[in-house]
Figure (tube, rainbow, N blue to C red):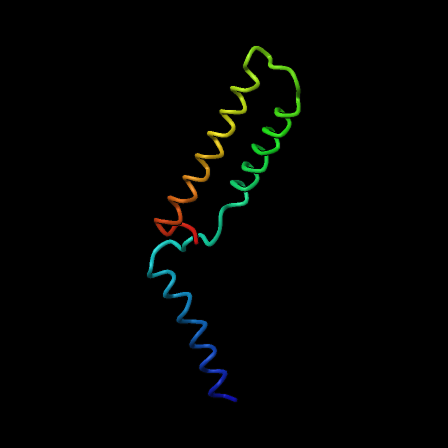
Length: 87
């Protein structure tokens, strides 16, 4: 039991040290703020699609801008995954 306790203690001491030596820890998932922004954009797109009226073409343009913003978030996530910023 004493050896197991010492091994566990040694493991706990060594593991955090390897993270410190390897630089900044990688983020494992998309930040909650990004997911919140994505949901807000999707909600806004849905609201505009159901708003009715054309508003001189501005409603459709706003939907296109929202679609472009969502596309940019997708590209940012792809970049972060490729560069190991997130899994």
